[in-house]
Image: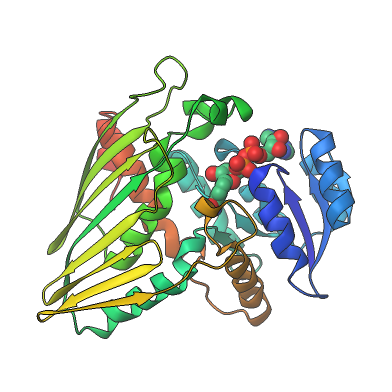
Length: 340
Ligand SMILES: NC(=O)c1ccc[n+]([C@@H]2O[C@H](COP(=O)([O-])OP(=O)(O)OC[C@H]3O[C@@H](n4cnc5c(N)ncnc54)[C@H](O)[C@@H]3O)[C@@H](O)[C@H]2O)c1
């Protein structure tokens, strides 16, 4: 398969290494970045041609797959253009930053059905710890899920925003602690809940970088589901990046994921299982599952089989995220439109 990548910044290095590990039938053909030296460095290290203009790369290289690793506001337009040219897309999160973008992306994915595929990088769904908990909940011994709580306390200081100026701005990042850092935990909560929300509310604040960033560093969310509720706290104003916590309350027990551990409480017993973190290609807070997520996408392309990270499978998370922002920002229209 002929692979291209656009956006050769931090996370692209993990994609490039994962592509290099795919095997001989998958080859990086070209990389593009508006900062030419970044595309040149990627091509030097991983092979292929380099482009400053990503559209020229699409015009010239007859790609089968495009990896999109650019700032948030560019995800939808780049994915839509690739899909319209018959190129499958592996898209970094978040797939969209507004309801309009989400609609646009959905229309493009629908039009592309049968010709090209769209998957979104919510790689943590593929972590063995998450797979174990999902199976445990489906198998039913804990009973129906009645609640989920999530807790993300990370640290992002001014340098994180000044290093990549698209961060910290509403127009280009679309939000802050939720859309960029907490989105993985929100996705896992939505995935484990496995049903659509009926109502969602949220509040957000910028506590520690006032005057430096336009987006929230802290968001609290309350989500109501049929027969269940979820609460989420996410902040990037803490002193360090601590492992996120997710706990699922069920009718006959409870299960908690934190660091390497999964703890299960059931009928008066307590059990702990360990899922040691493997070494990934990037920073530890990115987790170790990009490689699995990318490998899985190519397998699904080869086999024509459904994939856990297909756009259809992750849309509910994106709708919920937009609905929470709508509520936190007092945008009634967004609240009404979010028919989660
Ligand atoms: N899945 C994860 O765990 C994970 C982790 C980190 C980052 N990300 C996501 O990856 C994306 C990129 O984040 P990053 O930290 O690598 O950012 P970054 O700023 O380091 O890299 C973005 C790159 O895109 C390039 N770019 C910007 N506009 C462009 C254009 N028009 N054409 C071509 N290139 C362009 C920039 O020059 C830069 O090299 C974001 O969506 C982020 O949320 C995901």
